[in-house]
Image (tube, rainbow, N blue to C red; front, side, top):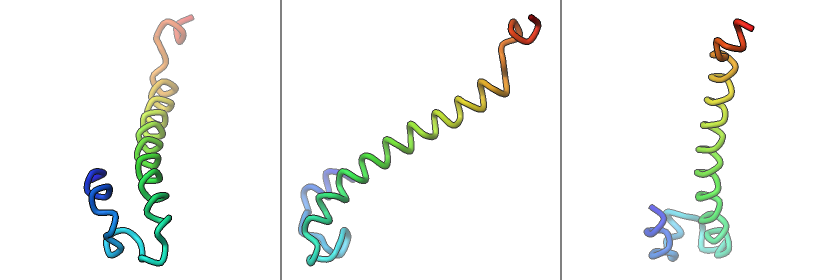
Length: 62
């Protein structure tokens, strides 16, 4: 997906209008950042409730 956007930077139909040339440049990094943020957020959200919901028996017993 990323290589396609880089190889075809002249695809306003798939990316943004030709009126916004810098829009593509921002869209590329945005997509990568969004993907990483989504992964980090998802893992954190899942890890947070999981650790809170299933506390270690050692702490619960003490």
